[in-house]
Length: 486
Image (spheres, one colour):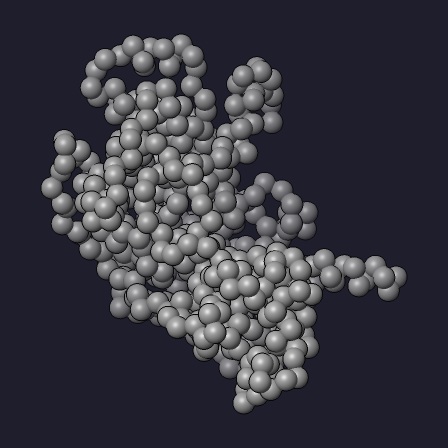
């Protein structure tokens, strides 16, 4: 029994953001993060840590970092003698993290970032079109590539485009006959007409994009919470919304301030049985879900303590959660009650504020209006960044849920966001803009390990794997084995 217990603990996965970032932030960033790194050891990225030779992934026993933090020699120990030593628990967590291969959140860095993302929408001035490439995306990216001394990626042939755009917009492989007909078509606008035809296939579109929005909105059909009726799905409502191409701002308002039970499952989260930690309460689930889905803010750290990786605070996380709360929300720091309560509040008071004294349903309606406020560029930037990632293989801001990070092309992100709002928050209009661009219709580049590289530079769309749903549908198409009923 003792052996089994020890084995289970040793194999428990380390959570980089919660278990490792606080240790490195408190003890290492001052000397080995930011712009300068003492002793040629930088912890800014996983790649730089490995390159320094101080850590050996999957082998903490030979890692110099572990030797130095456990050393008693004042001339070499880390942190230096004038600073507190790491606790035994912290050292154990670092050992386990290294032994587990040093898992690292995508694009996370300890490098100093002076970028403050804008809130309000901004319409960039478009550069002149080159060689007849008039799509606004191409005008922006042609200028970008020129500034970086990079060639324009070559276009893909008709067969590659035909397959790519079918999989991206409706999730299905095209038929051989349809491809032959398309290749024999000599009209100049045939690719644009194909994009329009695919987006008009409402059933195929809804079937395909339902998976994307299930993931975004944490919707499921079975599993945790359903057996005890502590969770409700929104599948029927969501599918109908996609089928109707419901404007995204309206869709969002109906999720945040539901007028029927069909869309209520999103804000209600999972009602766990028994005693739960402060971070698992319905109110904190609400804060985490809303901020991540619609604002690209990962509130998980700030739901426990002031975040180590961005500017969000514990009180801001609880303020957002309090909008959903029926009673005053008790503040907990690291799962311990502080004796304080937090009133309902909105993260961007420049746009307005929540009336904390209002009834709960009114507070939810106020939040729905603030989220979709015309001046809330964070809302539009977040969703168009997700759509760009889906079609192009990498976000303009990466990670997708770290929208406080600097985009590799601010003009591109802002143009897509403004275009989205001006087209009445029409998801298909943004997909059409991307899919009809020469950028989308370019040859892909093979993804590289960015953790070992410097700042990302766009060179073309990224090669992508088929999703599990696309692969399964393709197998069913090719073999004729699709089930008649689900």
